[in-house]
Amino acid sequence: MSKQIDFRWRYQPRKQMDMQLMEYIQDNQITSKTEMILLALRSFWLPYAIAEDSLSQERIRRVARASVQALRKQIKEILELAGLEDTSLDVQSQLTQLRPLQVAKVIATHGANTSIDELRTHAGNHSYDDTGLSNFL
Image (cartoon, rainbow, N blue to C red):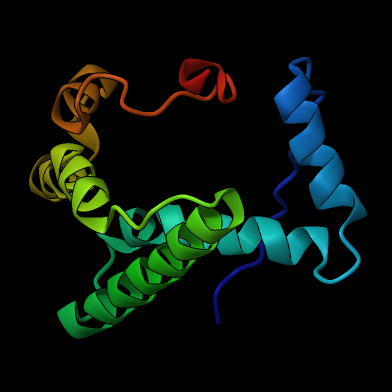
């Protein structure tokens, strides 16, 4: 049986869009905050988290397929919400440029000795921005 961990995250948004996002998550009557956050985290980050595990390759592939399916569904819903065309080919080409699997391979090959700078280089030098959506405005 695996051990339990206590994960706490406190965030006080300062940007208007982040505030709207947190209010949406907090006020949602259909899905709990925990379920919403875990769905997003699992869909986006779980394949990376299990890449180093001694799980079978088939189990890792199942998780990766489930993540991709959830992200594709989310893409479709966002496009419909915003009234945008389905540009899945454009999205797919942009996603392949991020090279996330290369990062997982570097970690698997070099293990814990991999520096954060090496990981950033393989990930495309800061492809992810945690300052909200300011880079899209």
